Image (cartoon, rainbow, N blue to C red):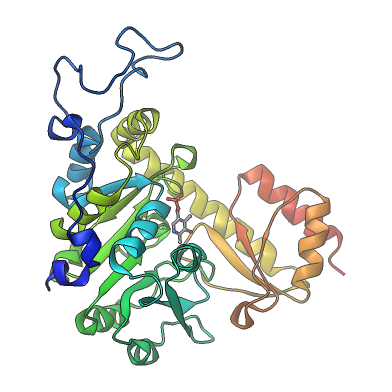
Length: 348
Ligand SMILES: *Cc1c(COP(=O)(O)O)cnc(C)c1O
């Protein structure tokens, strides 16, 4: 696949902003090139210097953990940044479109809308499976990107690999697999298979299992041609120094992430069991993520009642496939108990 043919011509021909620091990524020296305050920061340590624009140290460590070469990794201000950059790099405003299943993560539509890029949606099945043939039929000459979220937000399920293989094999644009919740799933994700598909981009994040949401660091894994394009159009210092340091340190404790994931999965089981005893609950859908999608007899009513108790749930009842459904994040043991107690109190 010729990525250069797929990318918007203005992006292909772009001469990116280049900082001397970029060529020097990860190296030491006397830096008189960027008009920083060379003395010291008013607050903190090392904050007087611009951060490494290509996040060399983080990528080196991440490369070992993920078994992916550093030049096939992009780091962004959350994984929301690569979502936006992919749309801006590959979709011509007012002409091109993205294809997404529905319901799914809202940011694909928002980023497309901001960029005046069309959005074609194909409903998932009643059991939230990808409708592969309908997706393939919905592809037009102007479809440049397909976003597939697996495990899917808000439905919680992994999308079937066979269907994604079929789509990735046939589609002439990019297939972006958003694996924000993959650490909570029992199956391995798409990283081991990615190299078989030149058109595949995998998104992961430090915001969920790693517990680093405030640091705003997301990852994209793809062939070096695609990664090169993202690097050309990002803000030069898109991942700030504090965040780079935070995730660099977090990467030394990946076994703690595993430990936290296991604890969250135990809590999920507890929450599932408790919810399943409630009369107001109709269905709890299978979840491969750190949240449960729950169909209630009257979701809006419960949503409002819990809000009065200062418990925020996500109301997903507006979509026909998730009618009367609330998405409930697995909280801490204390938070989950409080929620269940309130739900029991009003469960008539
Ligand atoms: C939470 C989430 C993200 C993460 O976004 P960040 O910008 O990395 O915090 C990405 N995709 C999906 C589907 C999510 O639910």
